Amino acid sequence: MKIGIGYDVHKLVENRKLIIGGVEIIFEKGLEGHSDADVLIHAIMDSILGAMGKGDIGCLFPDTDDAYKGANSRVLLRTVTDLMTKSGFKIGNVDSVIIAQKPKMMPHIEKMKRNIAEDLETDISNVNIKATTTEHLGFEGRGEGIAAQSVCLLVNKENH
Ligand SMILES: Nc1ccn([C@@H]2O[C@H](COP(=O)(O)O)[C@@H](O)[C@H]2O)c(=O)n1
Ligand SMILES: C[C@@]1(CO)OP(=O)(O)OP(=O)(O)OC[C@H]1O
Image (cartoon, rainbow, N blue to C red; front, side, top):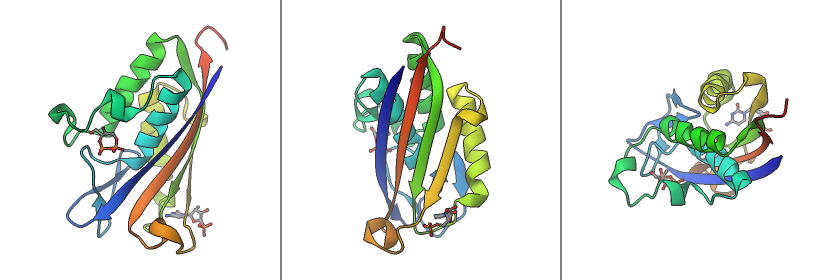
């Protein structure tokens, strides 16, 4: 078994789509980034790479590489899943939290879980996503950005 953590932050700006967990959320601002800036999927990928001892998404998908400009983070997640599978692991479980003052994530959480479970090739019961405000404190509370954290447990594929 291996455990990993991931953390990511993206800035909220005008004229960008807000995509979190592969769901487009209608909101006045979106997250800035080289890819689609899906902060939740980025944190989850980092937790999986961390568990495998394989660095982070900046190493795997450099933001200096035009191949990833505007990239759909779900496609990147599937690449991380392939790497995990080839390394002999499968998901035990993933737990994560989105830290955002606005907008409300709860209406979108089930769809996010479905997307992520599908990309991780695991049952939806192995994926948990939570959301919290920071009671208006800090950059998330001021609406300047959104953060996400993830922990994951990887288990050896032959174990049931
Ligand atoms: N962006 C968010 C933040 C929170 N939620 C949900 O609201 C509940 C209360 O949040 P607090 O920060 O006041 O504890 C929380 O448990 C989430 O279910 C949300 O949907 N979107
Ligand atoms: C995903 C990558 C690559 O497009 O770009 P961003 O969308 O800027 O995201 P970040 O969280 O900074 O992580 C790594 C990057 O290399």
